[in-house]
Length: 143
Image (cartoon, rainbow, N blue to C red; front, top):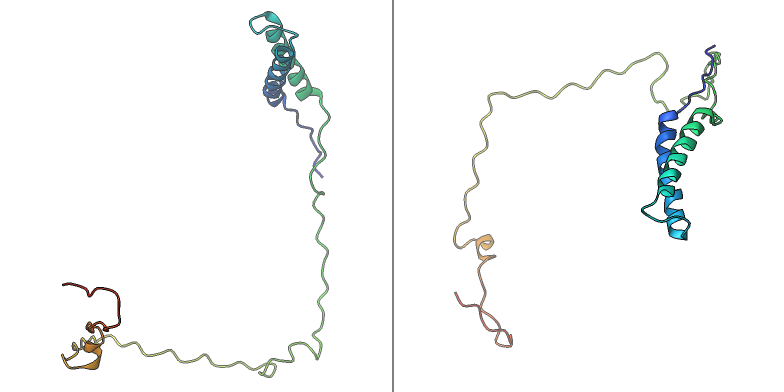
């Protein structure tokens, strides 16, 4: 079995230390403990970098997520019951033949285009404008 190795993150601690030091410096400036252009805010950033790097080196390791993988358990083969697959219409041990494939026609001509409707046909009159009713308050469309 492989041994577990604790990983340390000093670089990550360095960057988090910069953020920690900047936060300390901003709090010190905002509360009036240090002036903006003086040396104490800079020292607080350096202290934050040191604290973050040391914390990245010696901090307690996190617990591993999850559990170690388990060995698979062998499964015994179970005899089928007389109640298994009772909806299957085919008897046991028989197979059904596959359905025949549809014939493929290669040299077929495309269908002829449909003829346009005749002028007196009902489908052609369907889209013609009808005169407006006399009771319609809207003005008629002008061509």
